[in-house]
Image (cartoon, rainbow, N blue to C red; front, side, top):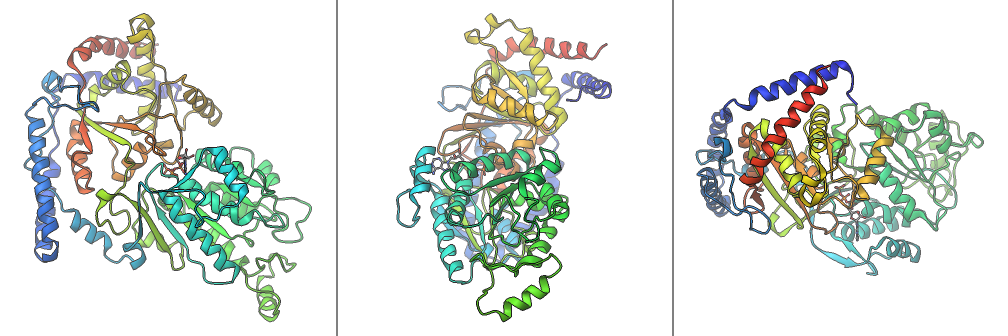
Length: 618
Ligand SMILES: Nc1ncnc2c1ncn2[C@@H]1O[C@H](COP(=O)(O)OP(=O)(O)OP(=O)(O)O)[C@@H](O)[C@H]1O
């Protein structure tokens, strides 16, 4: 937990530095503006060649003008309602003379069309033209298109699922149809799915996979679900386990949180190892790429020869993994084994070095048909549009389903626009770097956060911030707090052991923790029902990071808020990023703390800084 002396002295230096810079005048880095003018020239020439885009361009220019006007208004420090209920005025337009919103009125804005066009260069047709589904659609679970069994319907009822969300209502029928085709030995298409955070992507693959496998006769590894982190693997495993109740399907987990030997023993039986695949103790395996690689390399009897589904959840993150060896390892395993068995459970007794002979036998034997091809299923809220990355997956005639919203207009192409839950309210605040802790204190003090999660840019920042908040909280007697209730914060990062993280999540869910301070470790995928607020303590560096972070709230149709603290030097980048992705405007409101409360907190902040410094003084 970063308690070494080295870490302490580093932290101390940083805190001293933090104190030093407090009184420095903040400067806004505008170097990006010069770079931008080149971009703008390029944009102009490309839009001149593109006359059919004109009406859209005009519309955009109007919108930009409107945005610029708004920015100008902000920059002039004019009071503006900035909070959800519109009741809170911008009383803190310029305390310290630092909090004015920088004037972007001189900034040329980059056309979304040209970015889109560039992004589409060289991308395959299927990726450029997704089947789109409206975000807010829901369909009763009993709809005949889903053809769900009584067993699945009863699990859905138990889970409180009465209707299916947009992504589920599109993906489940597509997969059910594919299963029917597979049974007839027909061509099965791979599937790529992009849908907003919290929109129910997990059930979109869990339900049809359980539905397809529940009548299988023999336990064999037929579905492989790969997720980028241990935490997510646990979450998805639990979901499968819940939906497999009432079936004989067995769900396994390989995420590296138990010793390798124990994991091996849970996946493969030592007894039946003379038959490839017959030794599997699980039908569905949820795993992380690292452990999957280890089992393919080291676990005797572990084979993918019976695989029917290969799901990659948080697919773009998996494709970004620095170590992609796992991907080629899976492909090699599949290619070696794919013709050794057919789906009607007739298998050829085989040793692992006899694939070629098996193939020849299969082709000669009229009773033995080739197995169904493995169907690859990719899911993400921010599916990559990089054709080179997708090519590594060797997808076969993929179908691309994108859940979008009305505001996305003619959204086409991969992640052409990031789609956000309609129940999410978004705010940003411009503040000097060294005052960010004060902003966070304000949010905790003033109960802006409720129950929330706070993202920082690094493990170290998360650790230092959690420590500072703790010293502050401990230093103010309970009866001085609003409603006599102290805030409770905890650090939640990969520095904290998995067991401790599990405990913290439990406390958070039970309402005993108000704010989890974390690095990006859990930005993706984690489904915690109770998160009301996301605080981006450090502004995200790209739109994908923003999407995944804010997507921890406003899930499954619930309301949620996201607050981004934008440092003065990040302000230009933040606005450009939001504008380029069509996310700058009425959906993103300005939030400014109230002067009076901030004044009261300033002394407490200073005392907390001193308190932390003294921790390291010994
Ligand atoms: N049809 C449904 N009815 C009610 N609740 C649902 C339904 N589908 C999913 N949920 C709930 O919605 C929440 C979000 O679902 P899920 O975690 O699958 O989202 P996601 O799209 O994978 O999000 P992310 O991209 O952030 O990982 C979960 O708590 C899940 O139980």
